[in-house]
Image (cartoon, rainbow, N blue to C red; front, side, top):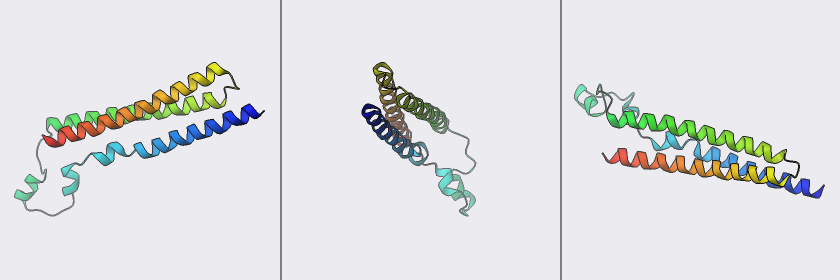
Length: 132
């Protein structure tokens, strides 16, 4: 009985950590992406100033790449969060089976590493596209 309580306490810590990471990393793709068109929207400019503010310019390759990377990052982030939830459920319902616990821990670890990689990739893409 004591082992079950220990497992439940550990699983609560892992799930709490996973939820905290999900909350912290979820807005990263949106917060890191600064689109000039969004900044200029709703501000009254002359036609010449509006053209410099992203007016009717055709979408550039940078915007297309940024959009594709954002969609890809959000998708991978959601998959990682879902994997953390599944692994947490597997961890809680393992019933003390060492193989099941080890598998759940590995899944949680890999999903968190995946979230970190997605966040770092997002930062790198925003940095590179911002410099061009």
